[in-house]
Image (cartoon, rainbow, N blue to C red):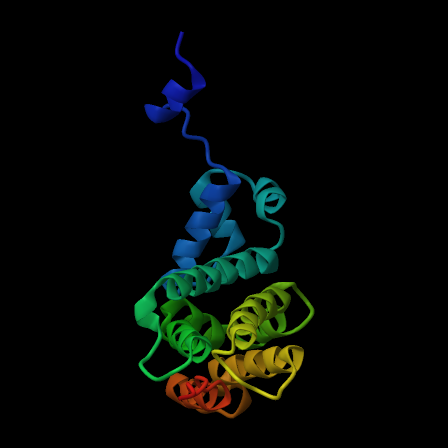
Length: 202
């Protein structure tokens, strides 16, 4: 008798899962297309009630998509020694590279362009836990460098974290606030000025 594993490996029991829904939705997002719950349910061959039970609301799904991309980028940048620019602090280099990656991401650009108000509400307010997660990652990055003396600052860590997150958000969502194009280079200059590498003595 064929086992469930054998059936799945053979493709005979390839029933979709919540993770399949997430992956398809993320692929749609990365292609710069709108994530539509009805279309996603049809692609998966399930009803909308099942899809909502799997992933929550469309807003919850979008938050998980954007966070998965942003967190993966942070992880990759922190693991790559080449991220740190010569003469620059690790913190500023990582945050500079991260904001460049976010602004250059086709999915994020389309999301901000077509659903800007929703993006602001989901990603920069207490409406979801996205900002809390971002603050947590930025805090950890800064805490390591400030604690080790690689970055010297008179700004308390909590305040520094808040300011840095607001800088990142300001330049990512520049179009929505001032009408200007998002500018990662400007964000980078501010971050490097705020988080200079500590000068070695002697």
